[in-house]
Length: 165
Image 1: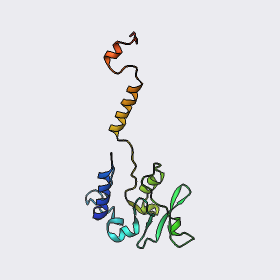
Image 2 (image 1 turned 45 degrees about the horizontal axis):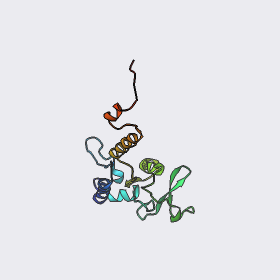
Image 3 (image 1 turned 180 degrees about the vertical axis):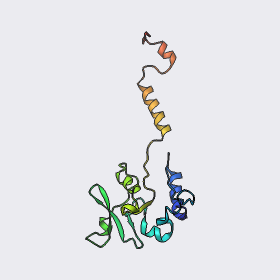
């Protein structure tokens, strides 16, 4: 968010430190193409009401006084007011950015105020996986280890014969 320097720095720093590829989204007002489209979270007051800062290992709470939280309802999420309708802070989900199963992380990324949810800001997903380069080298090593021969000279010395028709 262009008006949230600390939050932006935290996300960009995490993206920089992540091994491999990172994807970041910046909510930026553009007076030509999307003027006022982020007004709901553009200032501090709007962010307190309509955004949730997701941090690994912390409860998914938001609101001016962290009075709201996210709970799981069936296969989806639900916004609840803590202390009402029997919901306590213990019912609120804890964010796990390192979870291999990305189901909850995708749900967080797709939340919108139009659907009654806050906009998730912060590092939504941070999992370790081999980089493309590492995966290619591992694949080459695995295939090479299974071969009877490793270079052209060894191939010529074998009895493997091909017939081209």
